Amino acid sequence: MSKVNRAVIFIADGTEEIEATVTVDVLRRAGIEVLVCGVSIEKVPYYTCSRGLKIVPDSILDFDPINFDTFNAVIIPGGLEGSKILSENDQVQRILADFYAQGKVVATICAGCLAIKTAKLFNKKGVKLSITGHPSVKNQLKDDFDFLSDRVVSDNHLITASGPGASFEFAFEIVKRMTGIENARAVAAPMLLNFVVDE
Image (cartoon, rainbow, N blue to C red; front, side, top):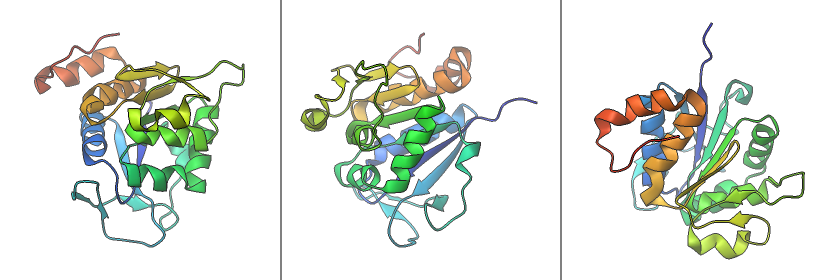
């Protein structure tokens, strides 16, 4: 029986829409099941992103039953307001920590990388994890992590990216990790990307 790849992406009011929608789209093209999960105090019909785009979630944390054991990746998009909501949510923090401890993919982009710190994802060997994120949050992270200027950084199963313009590279890094390079290249070919999906 083949392994089913499933990812959950958390969104909130103020989430950066490019980062969220591009990632969901690319992963679904790659055959990965993606659950768009909203995070809010109240059950709402949609979330308003940082530039006004409205996204209807598949489910809402704390309101809908979700078995996170069936997922093998968790994704946190940026957007200053959205990433603040997500990074400060206790349940999101626990899910990130659990996924990281189990060796599952944990992926954040832009200001979403703040969730890495609040979830206390630190290398137990005493070596700083290598990450990237939006320059606006660098000062909040540089003491605890090796904060790089790269567009996308992979440190084992932790994947981070710098901002909206790196959304496609970010998404394909997740696809490579979850489904392999050949599938990533097959998905990329008809999309006419301006970069090469490589090892």
